[in-house]
Image (cartoon, rainbow, N blue to C red; front, side):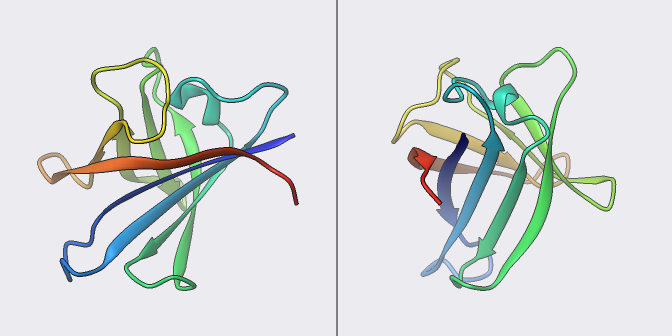
Length: 115
């Protein structure tokens, strides 16, 4: 079965737009932590639906609550959830682009993909 999780954050270039991150993974059970998306895929729409970039999801060693979105073997985003180990709609997510550039996001959807 395929599972999907989406979260949004304010677009840094245009605060009126939202960036949409969508993670997808093939698994037997619904993901409960970010580590469960390891070896899955991600797409990010930067403020405009339909215009997105593709990434691979890689679990950070020994950190169940941290993943990176990689492109061409290089980490582009680091993503983690602070206060909780489980994933739930409306819970906060931290997105990091580079060492000091962090922003807050919110989980908007977690579902089994039917297509």
